[in-house]
Image 1 (cartoon, one colour):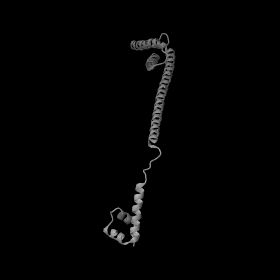
Image 2 (cartoon, helix red, strand yellow; image 1 turned 135 degrees about the horizontal axis):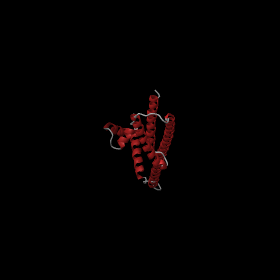
Image 3 (cartoon, helix red, strand yellow; image 1 turned 60 degrees about the vertical axis):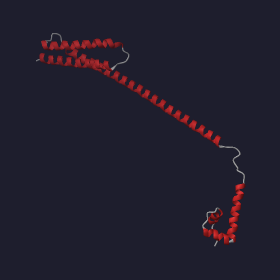
Image 4 (spheres, helix red, strand yellow; image 1 turned 90 degrees about the vertical axis):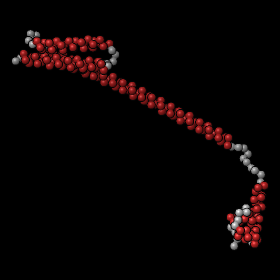
Length: 195
């Protein structure tokens, strides 16, 4: 039985077990194979060192660096575009919200003006010349009318404003509330006088 290639290589390299060395000394076939392996190693050692005709690593490294740089620029461009889109969205939403609030305020003012006009018509329908008014009712009526006159002066002062504001809405709400109270006092007075 002959030695395996692994055992023969160990003999060639001087790392074999004593039994394998003794076998090569007595077996001509294994000794010839060890001699062939030694001459092959010597022939390979005599070959000149070969390298590529030109070194490709610097060009490869430069190409990789350029690709990495262009990816960074592309990423930065996408980030900038996303941020610009977000700013545009925020400005658009904010502008839309402001326009919606302004439209809502305009609608509220128009609604309150309509309520105010209806209450004034109701007051005119309740007023009749020569009706008797108690001192308490007259004091309440005068106080409410003074407040309404004060609000009317503030509304007249704000008449030049281009867009309604929440303050303007509050003034109209207060005017409607006072007119409703005045209608209530007048209708109560008419009911008592009518008894």
